[in-house]
Structures are given as C-alpha cells and as structure tokens.
Amino acid sequence: MQDKMTFLSEGIIKTLQTNHQSIATAESCTGGLLAYQFTAIAGASEVFLGGIVSYTDKIKHQCLGVPKELLECYGAVSEPVVRAMLEGVFRVFGVTYAMATSGVAGPSGGSAQNPVGTVYIGVQRYGLEPIVERHLLTGERKEIQHQSCQIALERLAKISKFC
Image 1 (cartoon, rainbow, N blue to C red):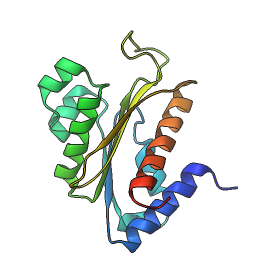
Image 2 (cartoon, rainbow, N blue to C red):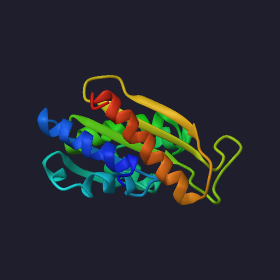
Image 3 (cartoon, helix red, strand yellow):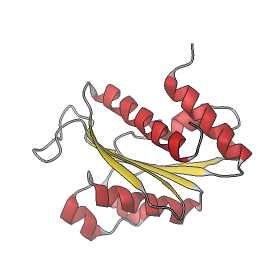
C-alpha cells in the first residue's frame, strides 16, 4: 500500500515533468527528509535539482543568504527566516518551486515562543507570493519530521496544481 507522502511526491514529480518545471528544498528540522521524498521516486532527477540541509544559523546565512539580522531578531524558527530560505533556494538553484522548513522537532530545544513541535513550512512558485505557515505538531521527533514533510508536500501539491 502506497503512503500519502509517496503518492504526493509521485504526483508532484509527474506534474513538474509534464510542465517542464523544477523544484529544490532548504531544510532545517526535517534534515533532508523532504528531499528524500523526491529522490526516492525514479525519474525525480528530471525535476528535483537538489536541497540544502541548513541545520545551523551559519549555514542558513552562508549557503542560503539568510541575513544575520533576521536570524538574530526573529530566530531560525520564524516566518521571516523561512521566507529568506525560500529566496535562497531560488537564488542557488534557479527553480520553479521552492520549499523550506524550520522548526523544533524535539525532544528538547523548545521555548515559550516556539515549543517543541513548532514548525514553519514554506512553499513558493517563483514570482508569486510565498505561503509560509506555522504549525504546532505533536508526537516524537520522527513523527514531527514526517508530519512536517507531509504538510509541505500537501501545500506544494496544491500550488503546483497536482491536487
């Protein structure tokens, strides 16, 4: 039986192939799991150009160009930083679609402002406004990571017209 993430990934890849479009990711709390959802599908290399696992602020700044001021003012787990991560994906990869995640998967690391389970998920088509949402997810670390990926794929499916 095919799981929902595989179903979504396959549909998105087929849609992007048909429309000669591309995608790349920038991930923090999901640690490459989102990129894996694409690379697990045969033929993904036609549309998935790559991903950056920017697990630290330093890498968010160096590789994606997230301004230090945003990281210092808002913190890595924030809407402004995820928006900047999306911009970085477009700049680095030159793709049609960008996805970004940043959050607190736990079991530690949470705060009053961003408790464990807080995840910001961003998707964007180049030239259009980004969609960045804050989610409060529950469960163990892996469950939060998987939920984050599923939500990100659902949002991308919607804007890419797969669903």
